[in-house]
Image 1 (cartoon, one colour):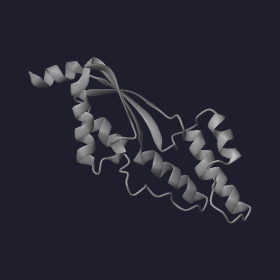
Image 2 (cartoon, rainbow, N blue to C red; image 1 turned 120 degrees about the vertical axis):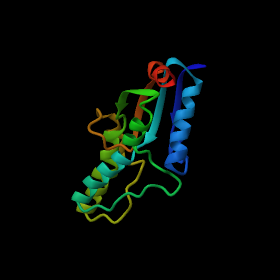
Image 3 (cartoon, helix red, strand yellow; image 1 turned 135 degrees about the horizontal axis):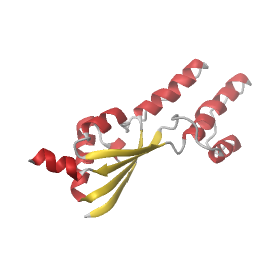
Image 4 (cartoon, helix red, strand yellow; image 1 turned 180 degrees about the vertical axis):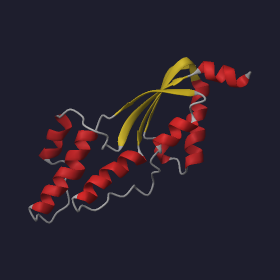
Length: 156
């Protein structure tokens, strides 16, 4: 058994919510008592939040890639509370997304520069160095602790 399990952008590649939930729940079997599961996954809530900001400024919605099923963080928190306690949600790339997915395209639009935003643009590097603000980054870190007391109580 492990003290920590880290999943980075794996859950979003499962094709539906039932498979995502089954995978997350099954990971608990490999954790020691009070072990941690760390999910680094794209969130549908953050995706919506950034797209709402873009929409307010007349920018097109960024689609979810066809091969991803962004996680619904509310569902994951609620549907796993019998085995996991949410310890923390960390936004580690929000400011970067604001710069690369909002500010850069907005500047291009306002300056009438007809080209797609560039991922290697210097402005992106600037925003990557700034402290994180908000929850606009699609990727978030979810830290859950295996809650053996809840498991024991439910098994009694």
